[in-house]
Image 1 (spheres, rainbow, N blue to C red):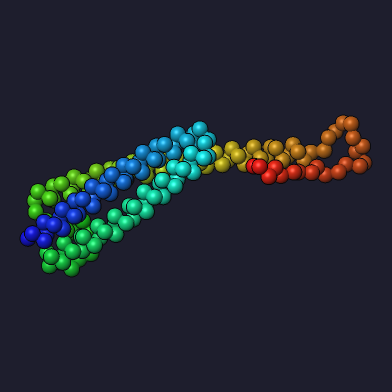
Image 2 (image 1 turned 90 degrees about the vertical axis):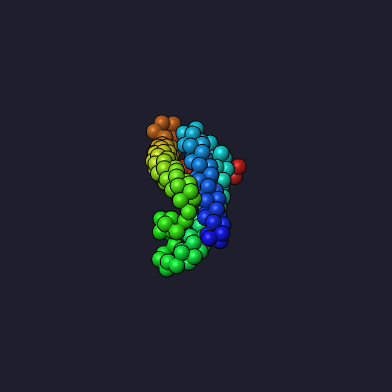
Length: 166
């Protein structure tokens, strides 16, 4: 039983770390929404790097959770797939309550995070549409020949120069 208590404590710590990481991702996603609306590309790049670090940390925690859950399942004599729900009956009642509460919080934060990501996805799509529209207008205007002050029989196509600083 002491080994099962250690595994339960490790699982609790793991889920709490996952919850903290999910909440950090949610804060970053809220910041990302504001940055997208402001059009601050440098800040968006910084936020996306921080999000990638959080996702990598979350993946590491999830792999560790699977190992801990499988260990709990083995200790309980079960051979089922290592999921948190299937491991709960083998744990002490006091740990079960904490784990279920933490799991439910993770699920709520994950649902909110999914909704925020969908909003950001739509904002980015609209921003991309605006950029495409602006580029189309600018290139159409630039490619139209001047209608006055030129010899219409000798019109050269416009030249475009790329600014190397951009």
